[in-house]
Image: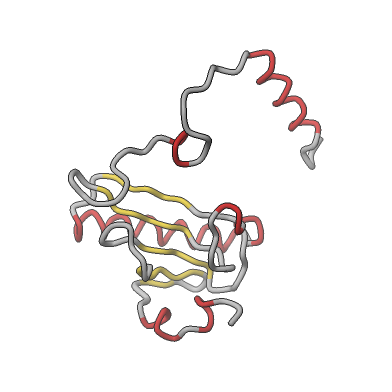
Length: 146
């Protein structure tokens, strides 16, 4: 099996809403009730592989889904993310945006601290401004438009 989203009919049967380029459905392993995935219909693995029309279609559904999750689950906020690449936790090779409705007292991660979630844990010193500017310059030199 190459792509579960494309090949498993039960996933398509869970469709909540779709437009001509994207669709939304509940994940089979929700972090909280109402954890939804939004994907392009076309099977692409990375955000950068999508067309601007597919990106717009995904974010149109995101807005509609969020409105519904506020009513359905009394969502007070949202975690919105995607994993890109196996090392970043992407387990299905089809781009998917996670939408998690969050409210006071729900399950899942109660504390969101990017340094614990994305980076190495523990305290770190602030990086000196000169070093940050040097890194910014190095990255800017390698931009396609540079």
